[in-house]
Amino acid sequence: MFYPQPSRHARFRQSRVLIVGCGDVGVRAARGLLPRCRVLALTSQPSRADELRALGMVPLVGNLDDASTLYRLAGLATRVLHLAPPPSSGRTDPRTARLLQALARRGDIEALVYGSTTGVYGDAQGALFDETRAVAPTTDRARRRVDAEAHVRWWGRKQAVRVGTRASILRIPGIYALDRVGGDPRERVRRGSPALLPLEDVFTNHVHADDLGRACVAALWRGKPQRVVHAVDDTDLLMGDYLDVVADLSGLARVPRLSMAEAHATLSPMQVSFMSESRRLLNHRLKAELRLRLRHPLVQDAFR
Image (spheres, rainbow, N blue to C red):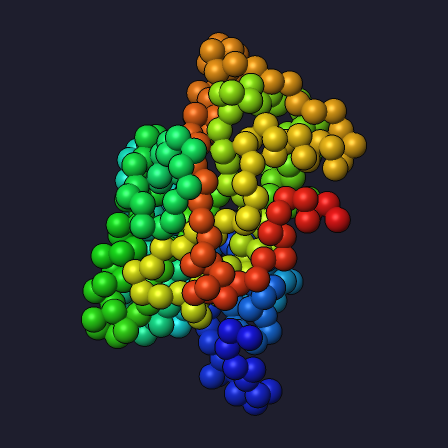
C-alpha cells in the first residue's frame, strides 16, 4: 500500500492524481491508483475522452504546446505524474516548462514525478553505474530530456520551499511487454532487425511496462525530493544477446548480426544511435527507496 484506503463517504478526501501523457504506461499506473485515488488524465486528443473515462479516469483536454489550455490544471490534483514526451525537434522542452508554470499557479502539489530517459547519460562504454553519474547527452533527443529534468529540479526546489513539494525523476530505459503496442520485443525479432556482432555490441537496459507503471505509483508516494531513480530491471545483457533470448523463448529465428560499419551503411541514423550507446544501470534506489519488488526482474520472466 502506498496510501490509505479512503472510506466510501470520504471521496473528497481522496488523493487526486493527474497523469500528463496518459499512454500505455500511464494507463498501467492508473490501474494501480484506482479506485483508491481520483485519477485525472490530460490528453490533447478529445477523441480519447471516452476511452479514458471507461478506464475510470477523469479526462481533461489540454495541449502542452498551448499554454492557454493548461490554466485550469492548477489546484486540480495533489500529485502529478508527468510522462509526456518533449517536442520531436530542438534541444529544449518547452512543454514541461509550460506544464510546470501552470501547476505553480496553485501551490498545493505534494509530489511530482517526471519520467525521463536513461539516454541522458550518452555512451558510457559499458560502464556499470548508479544515479550519481553526470549526464552526457549526445543527441538532441537526450538533450531535450536533460532540459526537462532541469526544469523539474528548479521548479521542485522552489515549490519545496513554498509548500514542501517533492519533485523526483525516473530515468527510464527501453520499455517492453508482450501486450504493449510497439513494445513487444518479439516484433523486432520477427522483422529480423539486425544486431551488432558480439565484439562490437552494446549493453542495453530494459523495464517491463507493468513494473514501470508500479514504479511510477511508488515514486508518487515514496520518491525523495530532487531524487533521480533508475527505473530498470535486473537484466544485464548485450543487445544481441537480449534479442537472442527473446527469439529462443518465442520459438523464432535469431536476428542477423552485422558490423558497425555495415550498420552505418544500411540502417537509419536513429537505429544507429541506439546501437552506439552502451551502459549498465544499477537499480538499488528503485528497490531500497521506492521499495519496489520487480515482478519481471529478468526479460525471461515475461515469457513464463
